[in-house]
Structures are given as structure tokens and as C-alpha cells.
Image (cartoon, helix red, strand yellow):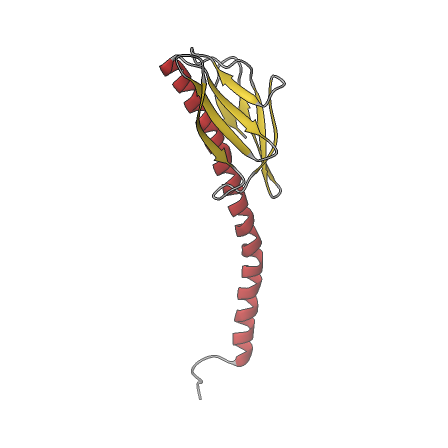
Length: 150
């Protein structure tokens, strides 16, 4: 006589295999989420550095990004025609969707990336951010003024 269905032993084996695969996949997925957040924060900084460079050249005014390592923020500032600094916006990397910590920011000894009215950077440097165990470094090339992350 042929039985239909499956036995209790077969059910236990299938559940054990499923739990084993899930136990392997879940930590990898959470680490992938952290990597994605770190990449996203690094891309945001690179985009803002590139935008500041482009705006400085377009408007013919000085643009700066001032990094505050203690508050995990940076502020984009432009100079108006009279040379007065005007804050455009502040990005708080500690808040969602980033959740990042700025571990260092150094542009020629200062934590300020400055672009002249010609779009040239005054001093190249790096910004390092961390989320959990994931670290990303953003580099501003002083010769070209281009930013990249790794």
C-alpha cells in the first residue's frame, strides 16, 4: 500500500535544512545592508563635493564643505558676490538614511574642502566615514578637484 504525504522525519529534515540555510543567509544580508548604507553615504559626500566644485565654477564664487567630526555633519557654504559666507545646507550623516560616523576629515590640515571661483580646490584631502565595521574613504584630488570613494 502506497502512502500519500510525508513522514514526520521528512518534515524535521526539511525544517532543519531550511533553518541552516536561513542561519547562513541572515548575517550576510545584514552585512550587505550596512555596506549599502556606507556606499550611499560615501556617494552623497562625493556628489556634494562635485556639486560644490561645479557651482563654484558656474557662479564664480568660493564654495566650501565644512566637516564637523564631532557632530557627524558637513555644511555646504557659498560666498555671495560681496564675499559674505552663506550656508546653503547641512547634511547630518548620523541620521537616516546614512547612520554614519565621520572618523576623520583632513584637507591640507583643516576639515574644510574649499573650491575657488574657478572650480579649483585649494587643498586635496580625505574624509573617512564608518558604519559598524564598514569604512569608506572619500578622496579629493587637489590637481583635478575630482572626488572619489573607495
